[in-house]
Image 1 (tube, rainbow, N blue to C red):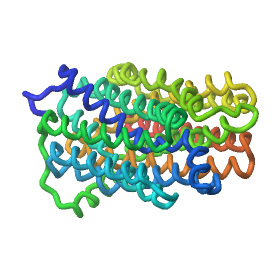
Image 2 (image 1 turned 180 degrees about the horizontal axis):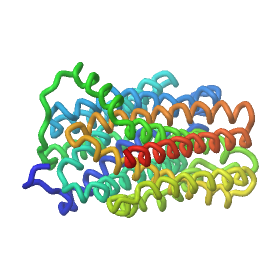
Image 3 (image 1 turned 45 degrees about the horizontal axis):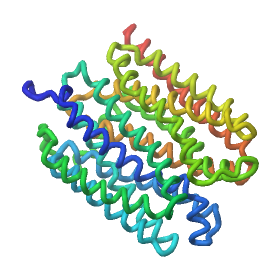
Image 4 (image 1 turned 180 degrees about the vertical axis):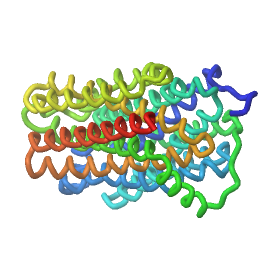
Amino acid sequence: MNAQLDISQNKALLWLMAIACGLCAGANYYCQPLIHSIQQYFNMPESQVALTVTFAQVSYAVGLLFIVPMGDIVNKIKFIPWLMFCTAIGLLLCAFAVNLPMLWIGTIITGLFSVAAQVLIPLATMAVKPEKTGEVVGFLMSGLLVGLLLSTSLAGLLSNLFNWKLIYFVSAGLMLLLAFLLKSRLPHVPTFKMSYGKIFQSMAVLLKEERRLVYRAVIGGFAFAAMSTLFSTIAVLLTSEPFKLPDVLVGVVTLIGVFGALSTAQIGKIADRGHTAILTWIGVSIMLLSWGLLYLGGTYLISYILGYGLINLGLATIHSSNQNIIFRLRPDAKSRINSIYMTAYFTGGACGSALGVYAWHHGGWSMTCMVGLTLVAGSALFALLDHIYINKTQTI
């Protein structure tokens, strides 16, 4: 970090960056509470409409792998607003969609370029003191997660009051405004001279040399897959018997997750003090417990709400611990490290979404919960492998 550069006390800029992270993340989730409305609008099978969630996750994962690493070699002050502008174009395509394929194209463009948030976060870690890394990353992640959860609530509300397309128009306008504001306020941080091809060679080296990066990426991937299993089925479950909730109430239910998301900054502070291992196990335990409550939530709405709140808290705890660890591995390769980690994270999300849809259509809510529980068990397994690896390296 530049000795003269520390944005940790620039609250206005941090808030602006956190809002941008939230808006970019939320852009990929508007469709979740709207599946039923979109299905009625286009008169297409529900299973096809639900694939929109998977397309969003897959395109985001592609953007993470091929776009985010460029954050180490380009001028971020220009790069981030450009990504947000392209995201706005994708949102407008969704807003003007006249058929389901056009909505899918808009969703894919939005997913590819909304990775701006994952360039913003490494930038922030390069512009703060090392001992503030967890706190600042946690604050931005709070913005990202709150934005994600609020986006589904607002999408449901606007759909209920007006039209399901309105959220895409509003989001596109806000995206353009934030891109303009950030361009004149983002801090300048060093870039590294490296060709685009060399980026991927260096990422292969990182995977080979940094075992903890691999373990933490897989832990995050499994955890987010479990969460995405829930994301992809929330609308179809809550709009079906016995609940039959309208879009707006489906969105309200997702607000429960905000409490877990708001805890991320505090979790980051705890992680800064070196408690990442215990935080990981706490997060895994919370997610396991949440799936038990969610299973009962197929009959009792209050149980579903409690489970939904807890699974968000568990995921936030695991994710904050993971990022605190990986950003300390190679300070000169933070965008590439974040690309590897978040690619695994959202690839897991895409797989979880697809598995959730499959499980719902072939085994109902019981099978969906079994899939979610199994995915959390995957996180637990790799958390154990990470623990064994650390103990082994410390004794050498």
